[in-house]
Length: 173
Image 1 (spheres, rainbow, N blue to C red):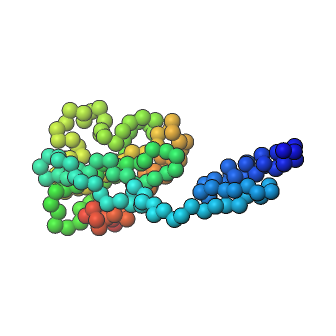
Image 2: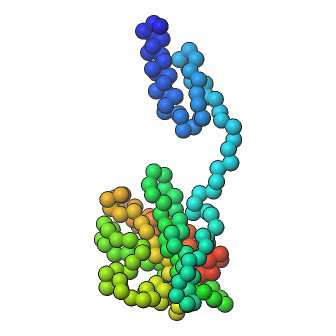
Image 3: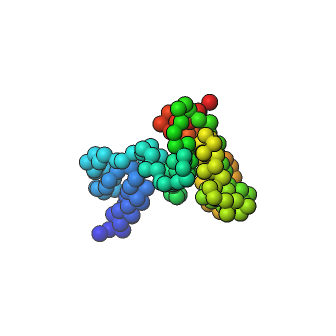
């Protein structure tokens, strides 16, 4: 193998690595990359487009859907929300989006805060019993992404809720 051919092979290898996402594989011939396409594979829909999971048991008059994905951002954890809905509503119900405290640095969608830790039913369940839907939203913390990513995540949750308003039974206006 000549030095010149070795250089071409290395150059071709770099190009093949750079385009590996676009094609299933590539063949390098004479310093040129020839894509070899994989057969079409039906990809499943993104998690945020799937139907709602089954509701888990909660206090009387409340349906809870924990860990519902609302956005899929490449190379990060799925963004999820917990949905608390009134069990039986004749009409569309108003909704509240809850963003946990913590200065964008810490916290979780699972809790309304230390002051409410011992409440039973939880503040979210109490609102749902009163006929108000609650979406408790997770967002990327500042250790994961810089501001304004947290704002973008909150806006994505609102968009998801509006897109699914009829299915969920909430008033999107």
